[in-house]
Amino acid sequence: MGDAAQADWDIPRPVATCRHLLEAARLHGIDAADCLADTGVTPADIDDSATEVQARQELAILRNILGRVNDPHEFARDVGLQYNFANTGVLGYALLASPTLGDAVNLACRYATLSSTFLRLSRHDTPDGAVLVFDDSAVPADVRGFMMERDLFALTSMVPLLIGQLSSDTPIKVELPGIDFPAGRLEFPGVTVELDVSATRSAITLPRDLLALPMPAADTAAAEACAKECEELLQTRRRRRGIAAQVRSRLVRDPGVLPSMAVIADELCITERTLHRRLMAEHTSYRALVDEVRVTLAVAMLESGLTVEETACQLGYSETAAFSRAFIRWTGGPPSKHRGRRP
Image 1 (cartoon, rainbow, N blue to C red):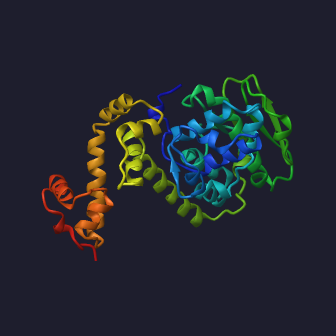
Image 2: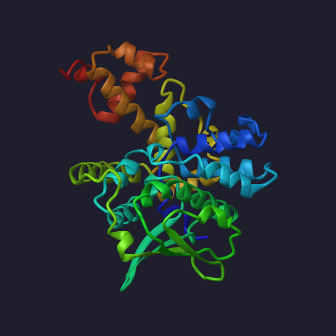
Image 3: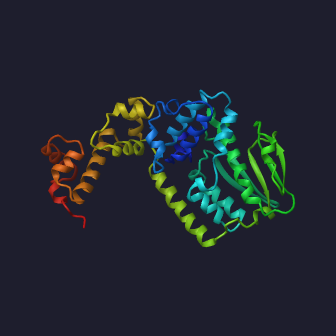
């Protein structure tokens, strides 16, 4: 496997992808509690559409399920078929609003990490069209097969909407090395699929006339607006990647009852020593992150109008004096200077 710490997929992800895993697992008789065991994700997190999970947490859920499911291929199918453009979020709308299928392919390659996929997508133009390559080299080996199958089923469930305007057979070459994918899922009106299971890469070759096909909801202005949102969302998520970001996110969740470093390490499914080492590699420490979170929240609370006593209580201090001393250590001045600054 590639360096997971640098993998494109290693950013916060929408909880909807985990919800799809749990819904498919239920069809296979696997309880949600077993799916979520030792992942740091709770049922309440799954039910809250605003929640984001770390990629490693999603992988932990997947591994819990794959360790219990009888038929991983059927499970991949049941997960993949839940996907559609609507539940792909702003990226789905951006794809539908793209002027042409070729534009949509470019967008999908650029913002693939905003979708459910862990694969890296790239487009390579040829004289006859374009080759869309699905690179799984950075995906952990034990889940690589599932990821490819899941994404293929998701793709085939969306294809009819994309090619519904075709009136004559268009040849598409699909390369799937070592994957036993049901040929019936690759049969679509207006398309002739040439399946190559002996290839050395996973790819789809799209002819030039197909790339020029208008998208169903083509709208240049809407596409540009959605693409801008995609870029902002991607940059926001990239800023929150890494172990320090995960610890910071956990501390913010309940600042009044801060967990110990050992508890957070356990939630992240690593040892306390490993957590310490990885934080050091990012030039920080657990104590520094605790102080950073507390001072950020303290300033925000004070400027919103809370008293010093109320702020101290919200941050878990039993004595206001202890909070005041800590605040002076953090900022160089007393908390009273920040009272009610925000209009």
